[in-house]
Length: 305
Ligand code: ATP
Image (cartoon, rainbow, N blue to C red; front, side, top):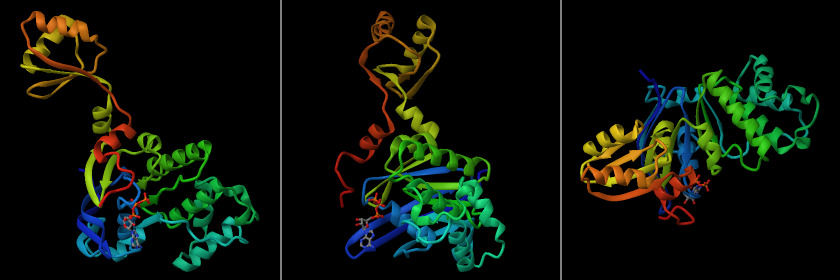
């Protein structure tokens, strides 16, 4: 059975009259890479801040690693929310050493391990201020994983990186998830990236979760298909199998059947009509994550409230 490591119930948070979170019920299971998707101002950062203890909620509860007393359990979380503060005149190693002292981490071998994991072992005495943006982001990740967390919370960690930097980060997150077994909650506006990385997708709008689905479910919703609306889907499936050899299809309700096998609309219509079936519509569908996002939350420029 999947182990739940984060479970929130009815999280609500207001800034003055502004409702940033409006009853968030979220469950994250061990091993997932959970992508948070939402427009500017949807509430993603606020949710991450609540979980990591950077801000408090007005209402609602949450559990971490199965425990309602989350204070101790938060030590099992690593995060990047806003840019971490590093000293410009210190090296990568010395910056992390500073944080070891601050966090009470006595095992300094963890610094070398974290730097190796993010590919920053060769930076030697180079000062942080002379790092590229990609190196700075990597050091931020190294800080987040310094104390070997089980859950990583990353708020827009690939912002501003070039395509190679983004691809490097993607591989790093995959490695942390697969090899180190770290569960990840990540937000990003770069949807193709999230699409290729996340195993689950949470769509947030105006402080509410409007959709939650697994990668398989998302792929199924976005996959190219011919959707036939007709009077009898059971009969239609028999005809499609028998006369056109179609195997990959799904009956989604009593009137709609989705066909994933490559098929010609005219050929389908002819086969069904020959057997006396009434076809109400035939539509070709297939969308990107960005299209799907627009369908779920609409085209307003910011999260409307
Ligand atoms: P973005 O994608 O732009 O980072 P977001 O989904 O992370 O957006 P939040 O930063 O969580 O959204 O903001 C949610 C709402 O709460 C917004 O309307 C924002 O203006 C408001 N908000 C966030 N932090 C504060 C704050 N410290 N004081 C007042 N309002 C805030």
